[in-house]
Length: 147
Image (cartoon, rainbow, N blue to C red; front, side):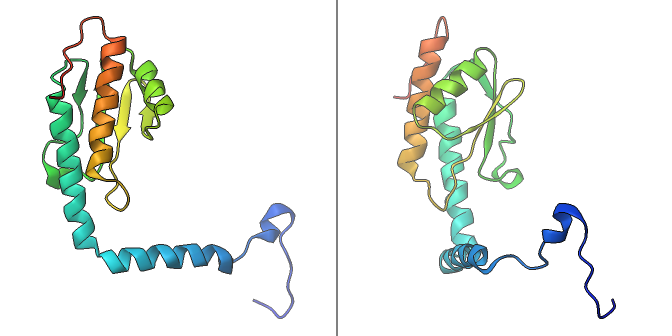
């Protein structure tokens, strides 16, 4: 590298080698939160939340979907993928309209991730209740029961 600076032509010339300090402030705050809670505690809550989600999905007693994610908690993170047999996109859209933040993957997969940093067990229960209601709405002969 010589003593003279020669900027690259076009947008590449505006790239920075270091992130802007204001962006790093948010990263620092995030790292502080993780450090104060600890990864062990987050993983324990993750296992409990995702296990509870799995329990509630099984409790729906429906054949409208199957859980694709491994059943072994040591082989997954906090996310469960469910494969919808019918009406998957319609059910996903209805979940979104009911305030549920989940993820759609073509052709028929809804991914749900109860994040241990900010999701509660009540949020997981509410999701299962909303999903059960939507299954009852879209399936011709639902077998939905959370109780």
